[in-house]
Image (cartoon, rainbow, N blue to C red; front, side):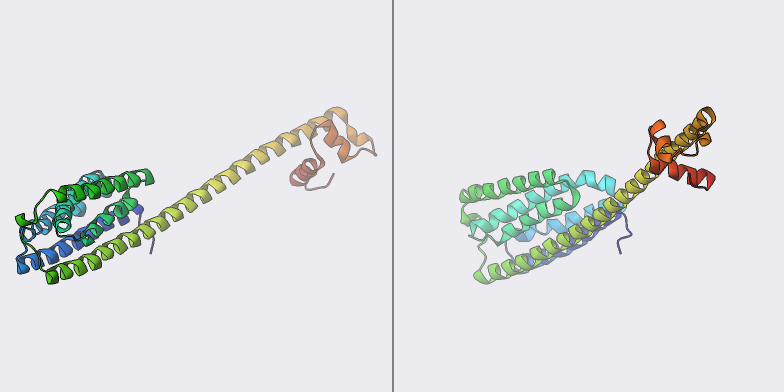
Length: 256
């Protein structure tokens, strides 16, 4: 299930997101046109059209190229949503602000924690500015939606925005699991490399000790003393009994 590379999964996120945003924005556009809610019927209709034209980007490019464009897209999306927020805030509706929660959650998949925090601050500033901008725009400039229309729009917004949030959380968990697997694999490789390095160092140390033992026996001839012990040899060579006993067993297949 998790044999795909991280970049492949991230590209998959982008492609499936585009499928989803085209479908969702089309649903809202159809409803606004059907109910003749101006100017949203014209404005929101541009969203699926724009995303259909943009779809070739995640579909045809590799993820490294796509990642460069993601910040520009999120800025574009934030300003598109901004007009939507202002419209509904004028009529005292706050449900539309749920759409802005998607941006920092989506950023968690693609960027570092520091960058995600910056996106969160950016979204917070936009939300605060909606309250200011909306207070200067008279309701009379827009078609006033009925309570029934607002109820339908709020239900659609809640259900579909939560669906997007769950979509990104699902892929965030998937990406985190892949990252953990890759980290565990790297740690395992490092442990193996360290073990091999330690074994090589140990082998070199024992080989050097063996040569010292041979030289010592040639020069000092301790075998002439029947009471000579391995402890004395270890002291003379500034080593320890364990190493000397081990190297003799390995090289000569006998005990001291």
